Image 1 (cartoon, rainbow, N blue to C red):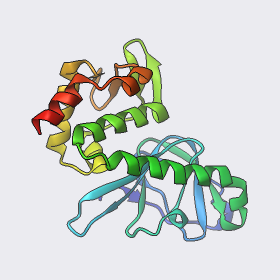
Image 2: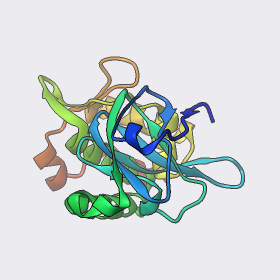
Image 3: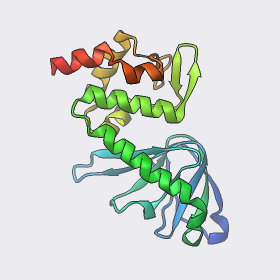
Image 4: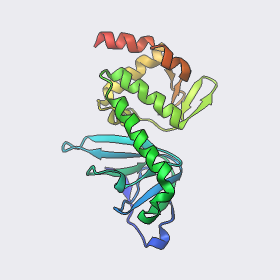
Length: 207
């Protein structure tokens, strides 16, 4: 792992913290982090060392060891991040965010249960666009640096598979890539739900 992990300080220093991209948030069994700015992912890895992304989280979301029984468990910063610490006796102040964590975890589970990889990746991009995106002239920009390896870890496949599918999506005009590691979804969100892109149909038929 290349992330930097920070140890907890005294409770009086825990209320608000800032971390850099690739840092790992320190975890405690009796407290959560609420994100004020930036984005993180929660992850684990199997016995072979393969990383598995468990979720993506942004402003307003809460993350932390009490929300998961998975071991190992890590929270990696995808951007510069500002967080506030919530001790266990104050969880009642974050009930909406805790409920949202459960709901988003189920959404991610639903995405990765798609049988065909093109569907998984397409649905993940839509989900990321809804959560982290902003409208631009050509569509909706996912405002996160997304590597092919990171996307592969999220949907349970190999990097080369993600590369092949993204190239096909780009040829079909479903996405564009204005600069390295950034993706624009060119098909409007409403139409994506109504019409299956040709690339998805053709790639499924080819598998």
